[in-house]
Image (cartoon, rainbow, N blue to C red):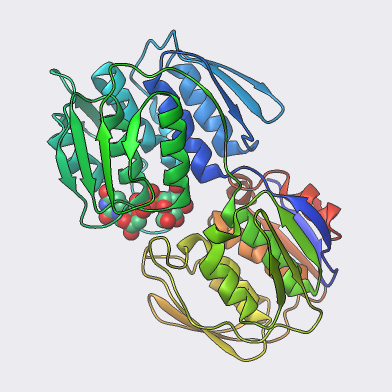
Length: 416
Ligand code: UD1
């Protein structure tokens, strides 16, 4: 199995245009199922999760051609509404195909990956909303069989928690349902706004994306379109923190810094020099970072849970003590054991942690999940000596050419 070998203490500097957003691309690829014409999806990052979504589309009967970062998709021969268990398991987000398949084919058959390393990840909110729209749900062991014999119809749905995946599934289902859907308690993440923009360009009528209430008027049919995926705000933060932890000077392009207001504010709270423009962000400063102002994760626009493990690593090399409170997932601290192996001083309770900055040293560590794994790479970049990070398949689900990109910026990293 591949691993990264990293020799720390090299400054990361230069310019980088950040990859397209994984969490935007995956629902957009699922949304293509709702359409009956060709779509050209631009700025699609080349990731293992992208490959899984492409395999799902092909299994459903769509044709998909990749040319560099463009994906040309033709769903006109869509012939199946079933996703095989192996493909479902290869990517947790396969659940975002549920709403689109049900709306387009009146049927969707999926297997669910169940609990994952971030803790239990139920889909009760997805199912409750779809049921209100007329879906019938049947479980056969871990196989989920959803049907809508009379088609989906618009409904008034209130979500008790602003789940990103449930909001996406329900807005996609509503885009082809009969009548109007009023969705309240929606997630407001920028990726939801990106998905709505794609769907509206295909002819959908979705109002209010990015706010708590969305009004969706079902269309008879949706066409394809050409659409460019937004920049990945979590990957952007990863590279900015890498520069911050190594005393580098990095300019990132291809992101809207307003999407990162909270994490950027925390980063500048460490004393780093941040300059922010309309579509770029620069971090500089060779002085070691000070402790991070307290972080409490939450649904957008609060601090993103995906950024927490990245900031854990930053805290491990900052001067003073930083405090964290995870409020979205049960287990966001999987990297802490390995950080401690590298010399980090960590006090933990179930959902909270305090980290006192120290000097990190190289060790043999192992990624347990995507962002925790990226956090370990950040720690390795700032550590004295050599670190081996194993289980990097987790990391490569979300970072395009991670090793090469870090190396281009000045890191000493290789993959073996
Ligand atoms: C998405 C992102 C993930 C990010 C997360 C939160 C993608 C592919 N993934 O995941 O990177 O960390 O948003 O920003 O976009 N919940 C329920 N019932 C449900 C659905 C969710 O209880 O039906 C709970 C979950 O257990 C979790 C919380 O709601 O505690 C947030 O989950 P959700 O917003 O749905 O995250 P995902 O869409 O899975």
